[in-house]
Image (tube, rainbow, N blue to C red; front, side, top):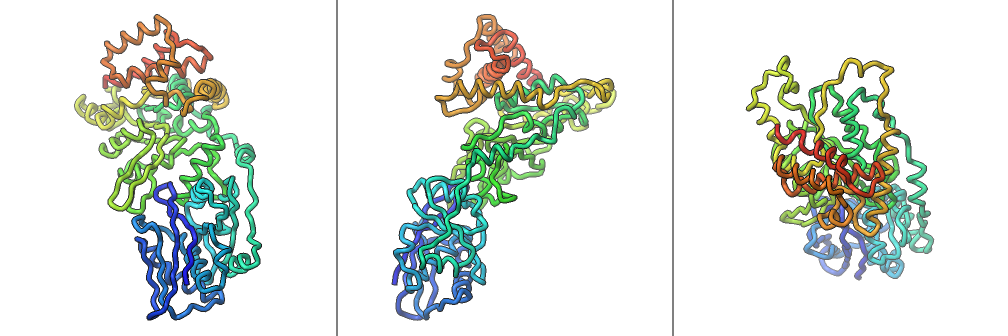
Length: 507
């Protein structure tokens, strides 16, 4: 007796098709599982057998062989329990094999036969639709994920016995489709964090607004208590909302990581702020189980590194390639996977160990100590950061309650204006923001006035800029011009961009 059903294995954030084959033959009673299963998949033997018995079905004393194909792909997770059980029941004649032909099943079984939620249902459902699978059975607890995937019939089930009954009667409960655009509109909330709470620092707020408008990488350097972290935490309040496609893309990552909470997709841009003690693997991803790291969880959002100089230097250095390539290719002995990593990097740090350089009335650090402290991010990483902001100590007059300051609403208006211009500009390109332009796109979309070009050439020689730094100044200037709805990049736009680029390079 033989039966085969489809399932899927998630490696990183990308699913792969797995065929669950079961053969029941004569011989000594045995239960063998082949096809490179991990330890948690091998443990499915006890879960599946007890779930089948406790659901009221008998297990024949025969030789049972289960193959998870392809055999060269390592299988992880508990989602193979359900397809193994259904294939087994089909092989012994409890279920008509024609009922499960071409069907994909994913789910974990409890010992009493209940079907439990598993990670990665959303990317699996999208993958199944792309592969032309017509029917997908998932746990009822994951139904909210399947509801937003078009092009496939998705069915939810709560127990093995009820699923078998529905398969026999051909009356599976289809999950009703939901409107993703409506979800984004309903769950858009005004942020409780507002830039009005940040006293003073108007120049730093301006730089933050430019960074958010073009999705540029940003570095704050200033003394403790000057508002660096406050400004970084409020960036999501001025940046545009996720589009439906981005919402689905980000939610797939969080589904694979088991981080979808409150029975809802990710509707706001992620904001990840790992502690400075984080390891390189936790930041980049690529553990033995192919889990994604913080840079992938920050995809389409903000990765904030507070106290950046306290991070290990080798940890900071691992960001160099993701910042340029917007993805991470992980090669390990047992797998190869690609993690998306299109994030806006925001860093904040003190100028020295004590935090008060160059105020010599407080700071006792030597020039050598200051250079060593700043040296953790200097070089290739600093060169990849578009905007550098020196944040000064807040003046006493700025702390007065009646002092006028830019609010998030004021800043969002300019940012959204720039976003709209970029949306129109790049409608035929595969990018969304100015920071993502290639050198060829810069030549096409960044027309400089004559004086602006001359100013940029002078800055290139005076400040010994790299080619990357040269082009990043143009990208930032393009964003500043967009905020003013200017087609041409003028002298003032270039000057402001140079100021953001040069302020910290000589430290």
